[in-house]
Image 1 (cartoon, rainbow, N blue to C red):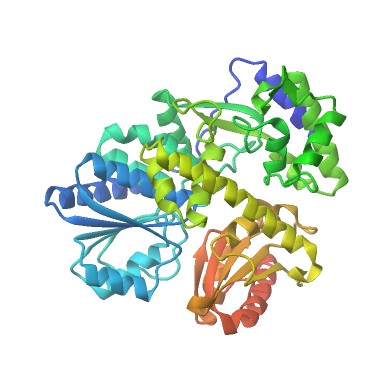
Image 2 (image 1 turned 90 degrees about the vertical axis):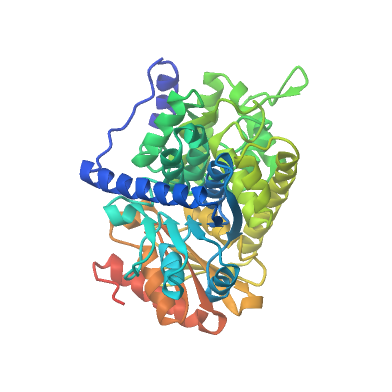
Length: 506
């Protein structure tokens, strides 16, 4: 398997026409229906701006949510609109009450569960409410608000378009000049791990966004080794910074990463200057790829080998040797700002700030990386911190792992489980709220067998007096602390039931 992957890298990079555009399999009627909702949403926003109405934008704190907020912020800014952006982990009754008290003329939810907009619409008929989302819709939606959600049109929101992608299409419908925001939507999709097509390529409606960016000369797509820092960091640091794939004893360990390169006779320096991954010759890349594949196989991580090579998305107008040059690095930076309580920095960068905001965001990114490595080390330190149940793995983050970072930790750990036939459920305490934040992750292999974590999170959380939802492959929930054991037991049962071909129920 790994030999064909490494051979493919050499063949593709020696060909001038190696970018293969995958034809979309989506029905034209579904696309038409989706874009009708896009244009309707754009018209409502433009009407509100024309009437000088105050618009409040609420978005999620992950990379996709930050990108969506940045896209909408830039689009509204270009219209001289009156608006405010707020980043949140979820919408609850407390936030709904605050919105009702502030009385904006319009509320836009981007990359937040559509049910949140439905919840608000139940409380008032005076506000214009708009949801630009891509998560599965749980339950019946109330009337009274406009919703742009691919799932309502038979389009997969887990792999074909992200929240920032939905927001981009609305922004483009508002003004075609906003096509220059296409790269930000690409970053959001990559941050949401939607590169699920052949060799980590973006497909579906995301492919249309990629084409917009390429046609505008803003994006280049090619195939290469995929490591964090391929544009910016010395090779050994790029290897040590890599969490997808997660490389045991190398990820997070610069000294061992350096020793690994030296053992392959790959010089980390040239004329006293550190080399980046982009500086390696094709022969060196093949050698590194083969060695890493052998190493991952020796650790039993067959699944991770497919993550070594894939489509790389380069933002042409960003400065070389900066984190914004590579789409995945850009996404990690945005995720870091949201997870480390500095979302305004990420939004500012998405809106074009390349001065103080970017400088501070880079510092946040370094702190975020250190924090992630600390949490991963903590989980692996003692067996009881990640336990195996009949149908799931559970990470007991409790009061050690920050609830805003539990999602990132679960994403990394889910790709290196001893048994990939089981999903990962991780949780962390939110003491001030009296709840736990739950993050669930699985593989495309299990979703192809009928596993739907979004549905399971919704049903299990509801039965435990909480809220949950998301995608089939990645989902989350908030559950009262005293109900976490009951919740985990129920999730374990529902996973087993779905994989056996049964229905989740409600």
